[in-house]
Structures are given as C-alpha cells and as structure tokens.
Amino acid sequence: MNILVTGARGFIGKNLIAELKNIGDSTILEYSRDTSYELLEDYCKQADFVFHLAGVNRPKDNSEFMDGNYGFTSELLDMLKKYENTCPLMISSSTQAELNNPYGISKKAGEKLLFDYSQKTGAKVLIYRFPNVFGKWCKPNYNSVIATFCHNISRDIPIQINDPATLLNLVYIDDVIKELINALQSNENLVGDFCEVPKVHSITLGEVADLLYSFRRSREGKYVPDMSVPLIKKLYSTYLTYLPQDQFSYDLKMNVDNRGSFTEFIRTPDRGQVSVNISKPGITKGNHWHHTKNEKFLVVSGNGVIRFRKYGSNEVIEYFVSGNNMEVVDIPTGYIHNIENLGEVDMVTIMWANEPFDPENPDTYYSEV
Image 1 (cartoon, rainbow, N blue to C red):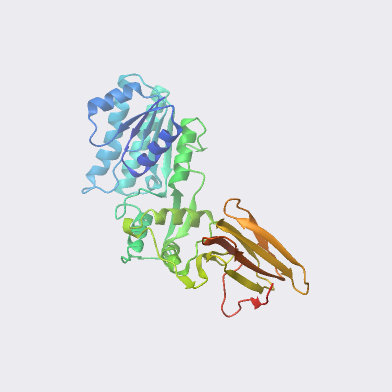
Image 2: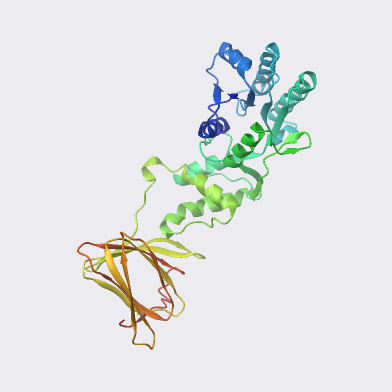
C-alpha cells in the first residue's frame, strides 16, 4: 500500500510512521510543513490510504486555526478529488470540537468537510476525536500537560497547577497507534459517527503530578511503581523518556567488606526486593534462617554451593550452582542456609526476597548450617 501521512513530523505522526516501518510492506508518503505542494499532489494521486494528522493547535493568531485545520484539509480533499482518488481517509480531530472556542470551531469545521466529502464521493472517512494524547516524543511546553510536567519534574523545574481537581481524559500513544493500524486494516472502533481509541484513562491533574514526583523519588528509594495499574505503567514509561540524557544512570549504595559486597537494586512493597551479592573466592555468606522471609538465589557468574539444614535437623543438603548453568534456588523459611564461593574469581548472585529489608524487623536469626 501507499500510505500518505500528513503531519509526519508531529507527535502522533512520528509514532505512527515508526510503527508502519516496523510492520513493513508499505510505502510511506510523508508530508510535513516543508514538503512542496507539488509533491503532496503526487502523493494524493498515489495514496491507497490517508492519515491526515496535520493541524494547528498553538498558533500565534487565532485566525491560523481555520487556515490550518479547515483550509489545509479543504486543499487536501480537493487534490484527492482532482485525481478521483476515493481511498479511505482518517483525520485527527479533538474532543474540543464540541466546544465553542477557536480551536474547537476549526476542528468541527474540518470534520464537516470530511462528512460532506464522503457523501459526495462515497469515500470512507474515519474521524477520531482524540482527548489528551501522551507518550514518548511529545513536545513539552507546547500543548501537552503530561509532556510539560514530565520534562519539568525530571529536571527539578517547578510546575504550575491552577486546580489539582481538574479531570483529564488521557489516551496513550501506543494505544492510539494500535487503533490507527486497526483502522488501516478496516477494524476501526466506530462509535456512532466517530471513531474512538478504546482505552481512555481518567485522572486528576493533582494525581498526575503526585505520580510523576513519586517517579522522581523512586531512584532514591530504589522502588518501581505498581506496573499492574495500566495508567501508572504508561505514565512511568513516558516519564523516563523526558530524563536529561546525562541522567539516565543513578548510583546505588554498595555495602562492601572483606567478603565482597551486597547491593540493593529494587524494592517494592508488594513484590519484594532484588539485590546483587558478590562473594570473594572461598567466602561463605549467610548462616541464618527466617520465620517468614523467603528468598530466591540465582548465581549469574562464578561457581559455588548453597547449603541447607532444616531447623532442628542435622541433615545438610547441598545445591551446586554456576553461572554457566543458571538455575533459581528457592530458600524456604525454617531452613538454615549459606552460600559459598568455590571458584577462583568473584561469584555474583542475584537475590530476591519476598519483602524489603526492615531493620526494625529483620526476621534473620544466626545459626551455622
């Protein structure tokens, strides 16, 4: 297929084109502001499907709304008519088309153009009234509060909230792109006269700010957000894309002694804690047991042995472990256990515990295996 995408360098356009290239099997005809009208006319002649994403939402003068959202759409339709090209056409409108403001009026006028065009030509038109779209590659300090907040909070720049109770209806860019690909394949989500992205998230402005600030603090606390909540997962993925490029990494506290080191990596309130343990050659660590705390050990480098002795028993069980043959060893409660490095180089073990370490209640009792 020949797929024409107007607004190719915009937020939605860049994400859509990236996914179309991932899928392959199509020729993408990209139109942006610096593309000549002669080339656009040629594209309109070739197109098998049109994604009309170009528009104006932050002009210097309100008159530019009609020029960009109505005038250009009219010119695009005239070019398609000129070559009697009645291919399907999708347009990105806005929920503000229901409002009586210059932007909304211009968007509604563009919608009417498409409805009239469809009636006259029989062409299939797909009109999407998008709410607030957020995700990677969205320009901050422009028209997306999510992008602006992510950019500012990640750089410790103050944000402005006039009313924290303001309700936002959000759609995530990946969900938008999935729906547009469905539309390309004639599987659009049609509701009445308009098409919609099925997954819309509602949240207040204050709640968004609180979440983004918690993402910033998460590095210090070594925790990750609750990824089981779809909106939190999407906001966190978005927030990370706005980190300054010289701040992708952050330090961890290494607890170092003559035996090696122990470093907490991630801790969560409901999924436990992940740590990295490094043992020097010949070193044995552990020799303790737990009432409720349970662990999983995974040796990723080096060779060693994990020994167990059930509390009250004299029988010792051994599991020989190696980074050359990775296997997870469960550490059940009530078993005294230790881990010894049998090799000649440092042994590295990933350790998971079902709960973060609490110095007030360590649930760790010394005893020799």
